[in-house]
Length: 138
Image (cartoon, rainbow, N blue to C red; front, side, top):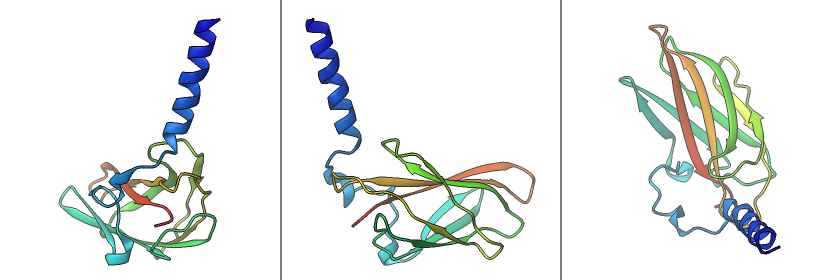
C-alpha cells in the first residue's frame, strides 16, 4: 500500500515538473529572443536564421515564421514540440520562400519552452539537424 502511495506521489510530481515555473527564462542563452531580431544558428560554417511574429510567441494564436537557410540547403522536415515536456508534435510547413505558420497550446505554469526541429540536406548532401528554442508567452 505504501509503494502505491509513493508511486502516485512521484508520478504526480513528474507531471507537474514538466510544466513548472522556472527562473532561467532571462538567463538561458539557448532561447531565441525574437524581440531583439532573428534567432541565428551556426552549423558547418553556415548560418541559419529564424524570425517569429508576434515576437513574444503567444500561445493559442497564429505565429508567422520566416526561415533563412544557406544556398543549396533543402529542408526535409520541420516540427515543433516541447523542449522539456511532451506537448505533442506539430508539423510545420515552410514554403519555397521560407515562410511558415504555427499555432501551439498553452502551459498553465507560464514557462513553456518550445523547440523547432529542422532536418536539412546541405549543399554537400550531408544531413544536418538544427534546433531553435524559445519561451512561449513572454
